[in-house]
Image 1 (cartoon, one colour):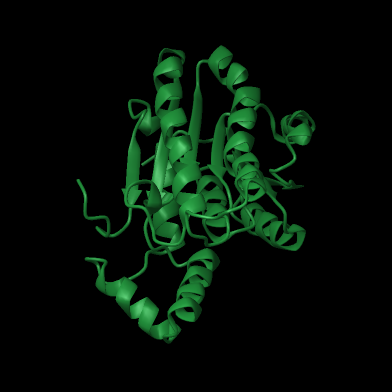
Image 2: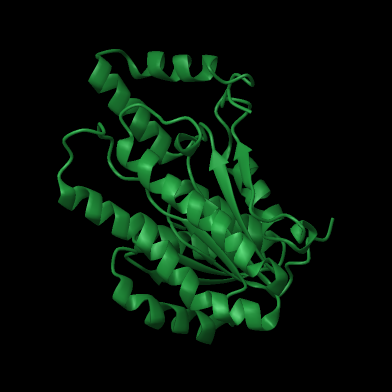
Amino acid sequence: MNLGLEGRTALVLGASGGLGGAIAQALAREGARVALAGRRAEALAGLAQSVDALGGAAFPLSWDLADLSVIPERVAQVEEALGPVDILIANTGGPPPSPAAGQPVEVWEKSFRAMVLSVIALTDHVLPGMRERGWGRIITSSSSGVVAPIPNLALSNSLRLSLVGWAKTLAREVAKDGVTVNVVVPGRIATERVAFLDRSASEREGIAVEAVEARSRAAIPMGRYGRVEEYADVVTFLASEKASYVTGGMVRVDGGMIDSI
């Protein structure tokens, strides 16, 4: 199936991580030009080589999302290197595990700036061009915690949920302009982040990390963690021409883990 992404320019945030890297490669396989934004320069350089090997065009870009002041400069660099941004993949890193009560206001503010305001401000910067060209894709990579809050991940549960409300509202505002806005919800995908959370649970509960992993797998109908490629393929479809009538949605990639409808 031709997804119609040949020559499109995608900006992938958090590209130095497992999900972001897999999404970037999946987009490149479909012919998209991909800007790789992240904080780990070495990982970005390696990913850029992988994207180039797939026949795509990669542009690695060191970017701290908490610094909103650099957005105009970074977007200008992407546009100069690859062209106007057609696809924005808002894949931000997760905050540290924490309970809901007793977190300093400064911690909430810092996480809100990096996880929420960065996505909103960046979208507002690239959205006018998408609307003018009559084509755009804005996809937010979220967490299963926005559907079923995850214990000891209060910051993530709360802040990511605010982006769900924002995305749904924005989708209705820009639908007639050919711009779609969707949220993708990963379950237990085998990434460094999930491995870190499993280790944290192991230490907190005083049990072996293997026991934590076994408990998680038992809660997933498919009986396993997902692969990053499986998640990236869904995101890539939503970014494509074939998903032109899909907007305002929240798509789960969780192996059936989330109990609610």
